View 1: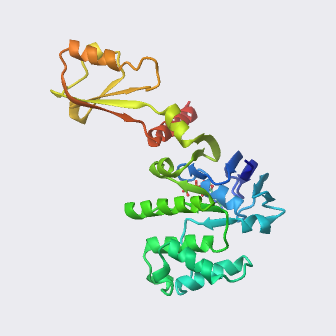
View 2: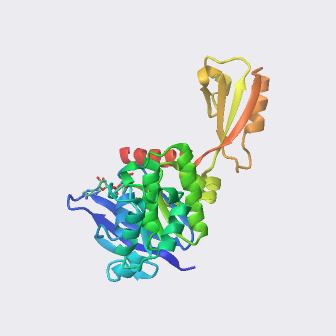
View 3: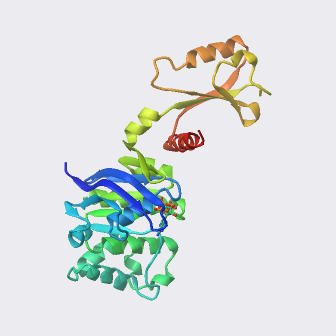
Amino acid sequence: MPAVIAIQGLTKTYKTGHQAVKHLNLEIEKGEIFALLGPNGAGKTTMISIVCGIVTPTTGTIHAAGNDILTEYRAARSHIGLVPQELTTDAFETVWATVTFSRGLFGKPPNPALIERILRDLSLWDKKDAKIMTLSGGMKRRVMIAKALSHEPDILFLDEPTAGVDVELRRDMWALVRRLRDGGVTIILTTHYIEEAEEMADRVGVILKGELILVENTADLMRKLGRKTLTLNLQEPLAALPAELADWPLELKNGGAELEYVFDSHAEKTGVPSLLRRLSDLGLGFKDLNTRQSSLEDIFVSLVHRDREEEAA
Ligand SMILES: Nc1ncnc2c1ncn2[C@@H]1O[C@H](COP(=O)(O)OP(=O)(O)OP(=O)(O)O)[C@@H](O)[C@H]1O
């Protein structure tokens, strides 16, 4: 399947001399939800802004739906909807007027039926005549999405769509993103929330200091790097780990009431049976036990950690 977004050799050095994006190559396939994950200042917004024609690249070529974003800018941009991080709309306009106006900006003929459908899909229909300033933060964010969809783009960039949004609204947003994808829109979202990437994305890209250090299918990433943690709730809390267990990668948690063992769930030998035997030999009883698969969060933290260690070395 041809890539709907193709980025080759992208570099951005700002006038300050800061290199915000370094030799980035990435292909986004039609119909996928791609999550770009990275800490503050990693270069996510810069990358999106370049693809959307707001920031000019220093080097590299980018195609959106087969159009070069520099030499065929209008054609490329007509395929793209952008929901920026900041809520930028005219506070005194009505929802209807602002979304209709956005469509006009792309030179598209008026289409009230389409605008109605978009507003209904975003649960904004009953607010169509309300002035933007009277809306809640969550509704304003949905207006931003409605604006971005008004010219019928087939690629949608969402820059931190759920930043500062409560849990319920975040789930609504996820459901909405899935509906859009089911309607054929390719979605690229940036997020700080690993849970969001794990929940939503078909693929995840991790960007650190302008470098795309990892691009993986979300499920594969979880499987490949996923480790499991075994937690044993001890019958009697331990003040310290017994010397007899010094060879095991164990940690005492919760004031010595829990013993934690991290293992590779795909390894031939996980070490779990022998650990349990060893505990029994030592007369250490436990009331309960559970295992938990490492989340993308654990993986991300370890990647960032590794990067910092390499930097310090
Ligand atoms: N116009 C600019 N001029 C100079 N430096 C900039 C400019 N815009 C961004 N930067 C720098 O480029 C780097 C990447 O910024 P960017 O906004 O792309 O990061 P981000 O990953 O989107 O961060 P966040 O998660 O905080 O939104 C940062 O160090 C930032 O300070």
